Length: 129
Image 1 (cartoon, rainbow, N blue to C red):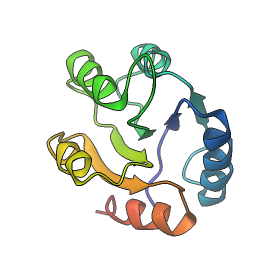
Image 2: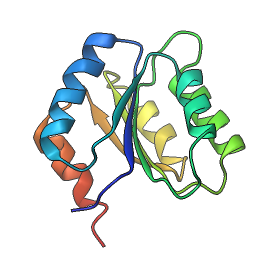
Image 3: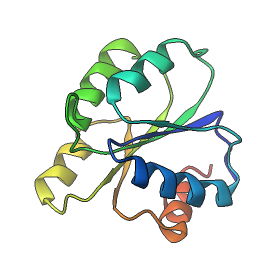
Image 4: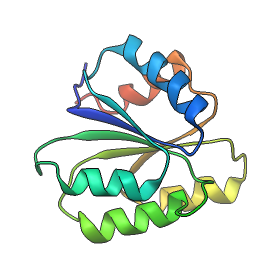
């Protein structure tokens, strides 16, 4: 199974982050899972990481201050060389959100909340080479 240097949970809901962290720990694809309540915090952390560190980022769309789309724009502008995987994890059932997510090459999936082990395994299956 693919390994990541870290998983970032970017969601303004601390309860969602806690639940998602516990589920992701069961998959054992990294020892480091970090939670961020704001996109700007996660971007700052990424700035301080080695270019070679590969992240799996679960990103909520609907957040105050900086929403998921704004996060993606900042991420692409600041880190064009990074090879991270970003998965939208949202309660949105709007088809337009799914379409918009596909416009971003760095976005490798769109999952509806809640996150489950099945959804994680299905997403990770996309990364097998």
